Image (cartoon, rainbow, N blue to C red; front, side, top):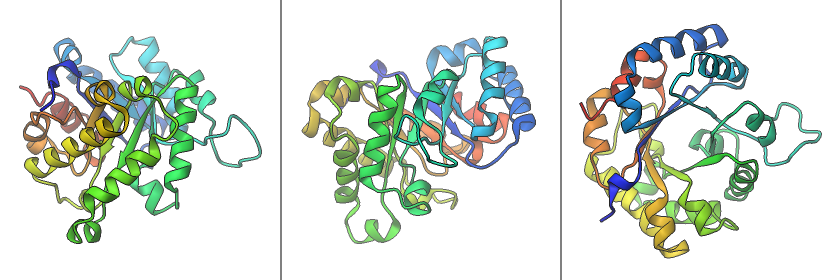
Length: 260
């Protein structure tokens, strides 16, 4: 069992394709009134708005010295080039983005991203000086077929190919059971803990104990204020990747305040 207190939890709000930049500004300001100094001493909080909101959110965080870390939902792995509609990691870094999600299930399932392209993104994010949040998880069919661990292990090994143990120790891996995203269904705390522990053991088997003890493992899948405490107090769960509940200040703040 891991020594959880050595890993500061990371609560990440993935806004997906929601909120224009006016809405984003209002949400960040509302969050700033609800999140206290004690909260940010206990947890890190990252906000992942759509690309069109990034500059607005960065400006308000910097100008008002708000205790939030800026995140992005996606990037391309190339530094520049003829990739219409894409965003390079270095462009995000210039906006003081700290965390970038790589391989979210929606990017894999809807946009056809493969383990290989996700790995390229992970390495590019690290090269640009940001932290990847590598997403892994199984479908309901894979879980019912007893293939959950094989699927997740394969995604971890492929996603971390070419990444060294020291880099992995500073990363985040988000376990998101695909069947629990946006469905209202949530893995039980015991199930979530078992899979997050498996994520850590896979990292340990692949890159050693230091990497396994350093990496933060988030749970993502219909996280709400009602289940946040039960999930977050599991020994191998070091944070939450929050979708729908991050679109309003009150529920997201309450998730960040799960310990109260």
